[in-house]
Image (tube, rainbow, N blue to C red; front, side, top):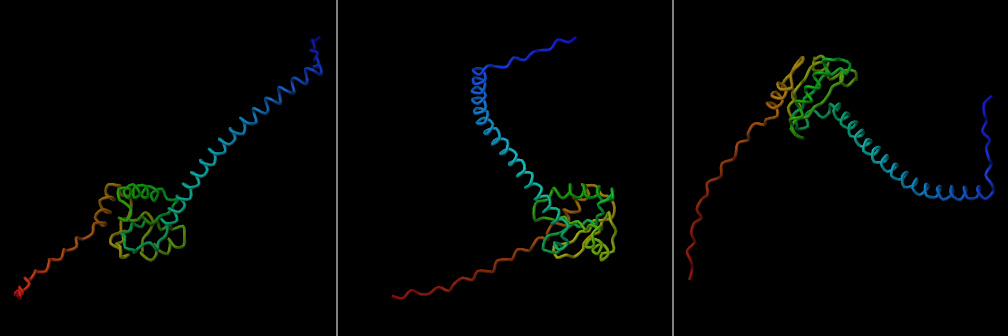
Length: 187
């Protein structure tokens, strides 16, 4: 037979002492706990806020990247005819974005014509091109070049650089300065 332990009930004095000690512990823990909770909630808010900011920025970038109305607004534009389910399109997109990273804001734009959407299909049909294609437009929206198939980032960067260089504007020659006639001094 197993030996059973017998529990001894604490006396009234022992119970009151235990409750007093527990109350003191709970009071300390509640202060400490409150500070810990405040710290944890503060950290969570900072992480969620930062993550939310990044997520919103990415969504806005993606929306701007698919805005075909940005073509011809004064900045040269690279348009990729893109199918998000095509591995070649995804590889071309990686290379094009890597080449675009060498340029500053306002030098050149990257726009995606997604053929899974009606606007992208219409754009591709209008220009008579299929996916895995890059089209380069000047600042006025005139198509300058069409690149079909895979290209390396080095080649794309060189091509993009050629299309972002602006023709030098001739400097006006200064007008010849005519000597002013001297006025005789009157006395």
